[in-house]
Length: 331
Image (cartoon, rainbow, N blue to C red; front, side, top):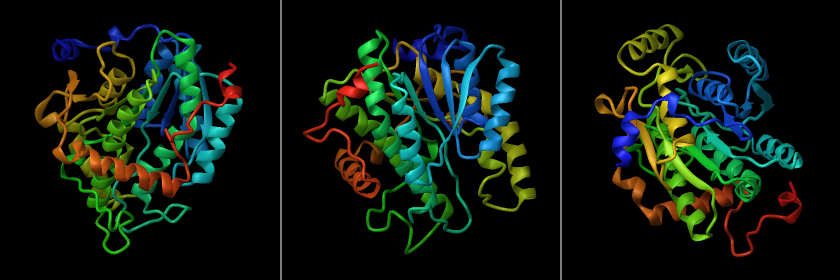
């Protein structure tokens, strides 16, 4: 039944989001921007968490033109810097506001040469996985607070990719220091994202939290991953690639549909993974459960990945002494 319902789902099915607070990483363009615009149009208060403040300001201006009266704000967040992640989380927690939806959307795709984050991690693993792991860990108190104050369950939505199917976790070289391949490192980071979403779900349910962890993927969408940032090829070649992607696969607005579904649809299940139902899961306006590669279901590897992420980021979730600080509950 859930699969049938999901096929029929559209933006018109999104319930009013008034009173809900949302944080979306990488929301200045592409899927993140469209997700922010739709949620704002439905009444949510949306924080656009962006690395580039100039682009973020442009996105805010565009969004306010497109959605008059939108409740949106810009906050700087560089997921390639744990200091920036901590500073962002501290600012958010100091507001004493519940957080209803966290969309771990920002991503780096296939820089041609190995690049490091400010903390010395390989850029894709450090940004796509470690940055979002730390962010989720640090913001969870605000999500638990939302669970205490709303009948709607808060949701962490982590954006994975169909690229995870060819991904492998190389625990002996997670940072690709011995050997770097642009796409192999990207696939590893997106596999890690999906495994994180599943492991977070298991731990949330084990702790009897009302917070949900789900995942989504956009298919193959013509987003800024194909147009700028850290190009795989020359600007001209990437522009051509973007044109081909745009003709054959999802627009970035359609690419946002699985994210919006995962964030709002009532039939979404704990630990669910959603994407387009078109050809090879690459495109389509119909959204439903996505296919999961067997390696993403490896719970032993997921626990190991979790422990590595805790050690590398200095953040921990669900240790035996885990609790929501009382000052952060008082909202």
